[in-house]
Image (cartoon, rainbow, N blue to C red; front, side, top):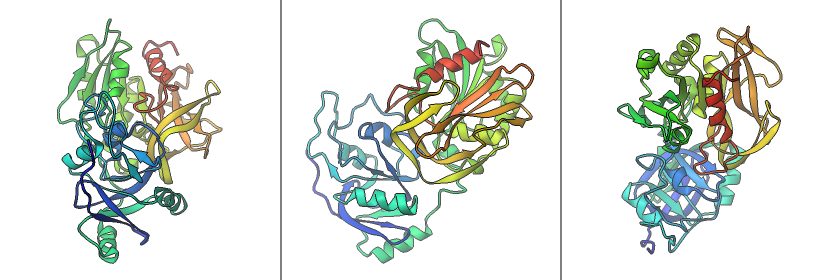
Length: 383
């Protein structure tokens, strides 16, 4: 599956830094927030992760596309990245599961990309200056003209994107084997492997649109008294611009519905508990982030994709209307908050928890798979 002949392309950051290369994928023009991902594998899962909506992803691994694209690994219904940047795309994709080349898939889904540029220099620039807006074009050759378009494009801060990536209709992922629990999962940009990991543990997952109400949540498993738990997924956008889902979570916590959230669900949990959130300089994206679980003191290597973080005190408890909140996980690279716990103020029993990363491990290491078991223990009232 050889690559197509490619046109010249340019990439211009909002501070004017310019890179010239060749088009990769679709021809045209695209804009978004420039971010980099440090994963050496899992590019198909990255591309189809809804958390990357309106972001132009720079791959730090120099050689991308070796194994082509298959029909089993997508994490959602489409590619979500706004643009794609690689140094050396594979000339030929080779894998027994491959159905087409990465170049073909990007082209078929109208994703504009660029190849043949110094991605190491671009990554260092983003690390030093921070994530910023960017444009890629195969039709505009003048960097100054493209820069004006970049500066006129939308910023990520203040943007609510969950409605753009959520499911249009509720659906059910049945439990595998004996059904043990029923969970309402709010789709803020959910990856397919997440409900799959819960189903493997006997959980029937009712995936709800991001616009779901408390009544919608309580209607899940209504014949047996409502859901055993509430789950918030990963997703794109600024958590400070998201209010409806925060109010829903506060209402659910007030009714003592056990809660588990990941990624965006961690940020919204923080806001529901009264903490603020802030934009990281360049974020965490990749499958090699070291995190310590402060409840066990174990270190795990984890899969990340976030540009915002929760502003909560690491070494002290915080009293909230719903119980006592503490930071449960921290990033060992920059001490960023990576998880929260909420316990009942009287009994000390766990009421909810969240992490800022992807325990479903698609793609990524399996160190954090225990979190799904912790959710089961929470719903079983064992912790």
